[in-house]
Length: 137
Image 1 (cartoon, rainbow, N blue to C red):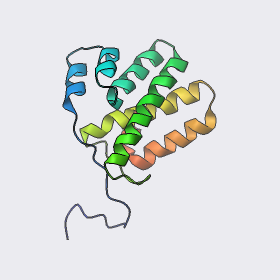
Image 2 (cartoon, rainbow, N blue to C red; image 1 turned 30 degrees about the horizontal axis):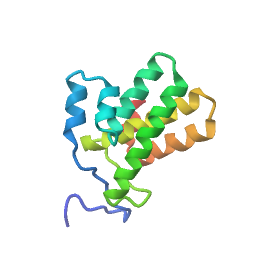
Image 3 (tube, rainbow, N blue to C red; image 1 turned 90 degrees about the vertical axis):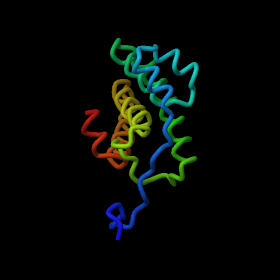
Image 4 (tube, rainbow, N blue to C red; image 1 turned 180 degrees about the horizontal axis):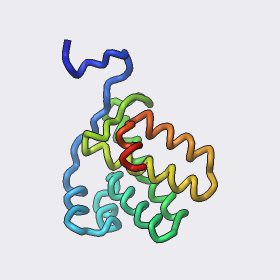
């Protein structure tokens, strides 16, 4: 028996492929807008745009950016074998862009009064990664 075997019989964790270029550009201070323009499939760039918009009080803009990052992340998850449920571990750094976009979508949905979407996205985040839910608040 492997120490990584899923004893509960659920789907295995999904680990997105690493895409270090957008992450490195963001870490080196490149604006999220420039990164999203160069790497439009980067959920992390869209999540950062969402965070910036939310922090300045532009919640509708934040919602739109987060939704884009969320859908880009869903596309990546599906290409990586994800079947619509199962763990997406925060501990695997390439997953963090999707998880951050999902968190941003929940946060912005709540801010614009979309309670049902807020609850759905919050639960999806917890189901995907309890660590992400705790870390992102």
